Image 1 (tube, one colour):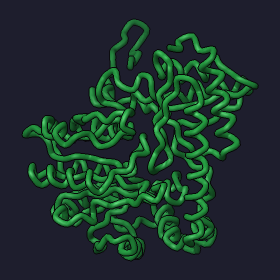
Image 2: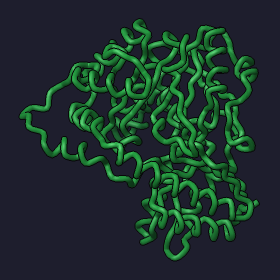
Image 3: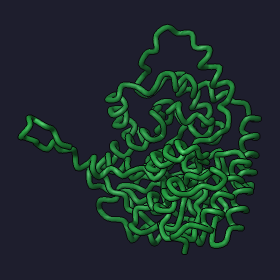
Image 4: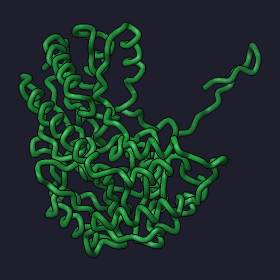
Length: 409
């Protein structure tokens, strides 16, 4: 950045090295091109971001409409006590016993992850994460001054947990933890009890933290069940859990999440960071607390809808020549291998130069979900958060795009 002092003198005003090293979001970096496509009158199918089109529960909307207080005050830095007590009862219904001091309400799971990183790791420390992983973990790590060490999972086996020996090879004196997302964003993989027990073994052996992003635990398919690491005996002081209302209740804009741990020392330190930012959003907590009264019928309808979308999308994608899409076991994303030279270029081309019946699609290039340079160049993440009719139109666009793309392999 440059600052002009007078007509003859210009000095440079520097920005931080930390700021320069912050990665662009692969989920949002193509937004200017999507806006350009819309200015041309094209319909853009947004498959790039996990923004469900599912209606937010009525009880949550009504809670906002029925607000009666005259002043929107700060809450306790850990969140409203009434909300945390209600969460304790909620987690008990899924087999997780907590007390309110084990929960800090945060501005989405994003703040929870950043808060946890800063609470237990120093600059230069390392966290091992199976890749591909949620792209914003890169940003949280960079902002916290820590290093992500990737262990690569592969599309050929549906992105299963890499062999535990691969984790062992990566552990150094700076390794402080392992982070998993279960069910996984971006792959939709659901870790089995056997895989989680292997993680328990290595966590205990090396005295590590196990960070667990479980915001999609409601979305597990084909009769498979989610096992929270908070329910695994022996990990009580090692697990730091992240949760959020965003996907469970289709409330992404509410920005309410939670950092959860039974480790009293960890939570004591995290509270210092919580106090430094004063409090989580008060209006969001009103919505989050009300959402805990969502009737079970809501989740049954949502579950059935996502199953239908997933089955349709995966089947149609795999019909396209050269396209490979494993069937996700959970969440509402799939990683898709495409017969193109570079999905970053392809995704931009779709928005800048391509249209089919005045329509196009926006996807998230997978390179941003990997920490290892060069990986993911022929993969994209697709979020099946649109109704099936829109997914059908989007797949038709992709099919025709692949037929004319100059960089097709």
